[in-house]
Image 1 (cartoon, rainbow, N blue to C red):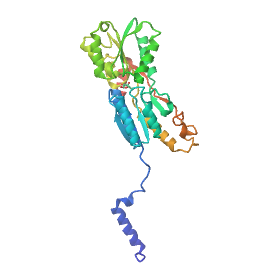
Image 2: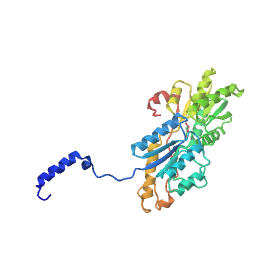
Image 3: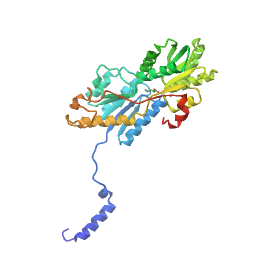
Image 4: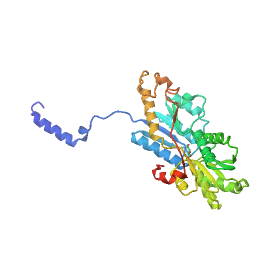
Length: 345
Ligand code: GYE
């Protein structure tokens, strides 16, 4: 080797580099890919489809290994998925609980496995709030209040409301009802004539409305409050098939503000939709990264403004804001035509 002139050595090495790709590649970055288990409720509505897209898109953008499980609106499927995430030793679990109750046991198992949990979209009813780090989602009670306020401000005379509820026991259905009833309590001219659940599905909304229209109350009501746009759009179809003029004979307010609701408002068949923003992906993964950074930070680090010292123990006990709200507005026919082109979901 020592006899070969230096210049020839360089030429040989350069040739190697040209041939062997590994030569050119910068030193391998050893950062372990973040693995996140995400248990979604299902794909029952345009809203949930947009929410899944937002979560998957944000994870992909950040090179996160997302283990996505669709619960098909069944709690037992979600519990199975959460347990499989423990077995897969994911770094963090994020999930949208289909209903509020029945999660204590599996959340205790996840905590025992040392995996932080972030709730997205819907809340849980547990006795120990340290079982999750934070909950990012909408203020569903406020959405119910806003829906009622639209009726208060945009109708006159007696209003006999048919309420199409969301999934029984789901935090958004429970709270949207509570918020609505809280406001109409001060307006005796507005009464809920009948309330039935449509499981947040368009088909079910249509089916329930068809049956309701055949009842005596179905001849008497003049307003519909639907806990989501999909059920309202199904009910509107049933009303049209029954010869009614939705949006005129029957005043209709729903929740979500999906594009199809804007189309119905432009057609004059829906009066108002209260926004519930499904695009939680980017904000969710900002929090995921902060939580995982916190887990690896020495206890005295105060780098992240959301964090307080002594983070490691307190991750579940208030190190993070326990509730992260999403900004939302109310849309009605007066703005639908102008804004429909701007709707992303
Ligand atoms: O309103 C509805 C979906 O949990 C906020 O679930 C979400 C609700 C949304 O089925 O369309």
